[in-house]
Image 1 (cartoon, rainbow, N blue to C red):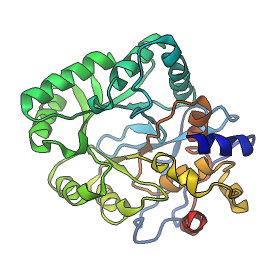
Image 2 (tube, rainbow, N blue to C red; image 1 turned 30 degrees about the horizontal axis):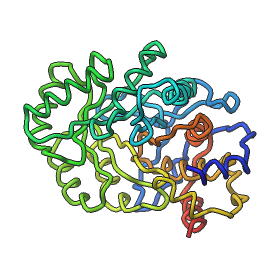
Image 3 (spheres, helix red, strand yellow; image 1 turned 45 degrees about the horizontal axis):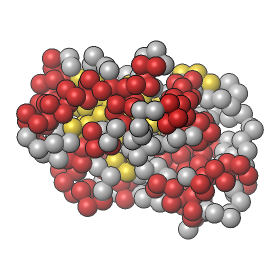
Image 4 (cartoon, helix red, strand yellow; image 1 turned 120 degrees about the horizontal axis):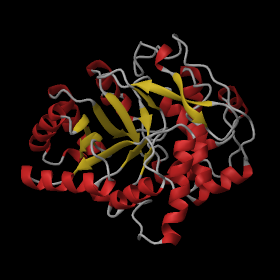
Length: 325
């Protein structure tokens, strides 16, 4: 994320973030739905490292449990050797996540050594109160069970908060197992994931047919297709939404390279492009938690700042869209 570090260096964030939840009239457009966030935005956790500002949280519809709006993904970033030189910076990132009031860490067997590294770091940090999320990515019931048992072992948790079917792989088989495990108390929530637009049709069909607690999908200022069907459907069906690829793996920072942060960004308590990108996502009332991946404490703190303070109304969202044109 070289571009991002450059922007953060130029736009050193020194302003404390103050916050107000999105107003009840802010998101009246058809794309965003007519129900505003209102009391769904509440302060959560500790300070974000930028004064006393608190991280917002959203309610998981199926349970009423509050979840901080920023979490962390581990794709690519946590697939490292279990050596001190590689683990040390990641330990600081995880510490910054929890110090900032966030709790959710998302992983997958598809991410190489990420589950093992995450479990090691959580153990080294004294097993903080993590909201552990991972996935099943296998064909067949028995293969899926073996893989999930291994995820429990690697992450070092007695119960998984969220188990998801990764990219819909053999979803009929695995959702049946996950329902059994949820009923027995082995997992708390059941979900499905995608980061591929070509899966959106099937993804929507599964959402309509299955009683899911969570869906995970790609959504950002540069990838807004989920607004058309998936996000409104999640709201209608009472499903929490995890958002992956919030920066399009860095592409959004490339799009604004050389551009000054717009003056109106101060209306949102934003001092960096990353915060602006994050708040665009969180302004959508269907979004529950965003899970950017990073190996940098500075980026983690910036992610957390994007989950605090003022959120944009529809007029400001349109300005954001125009800004990255």
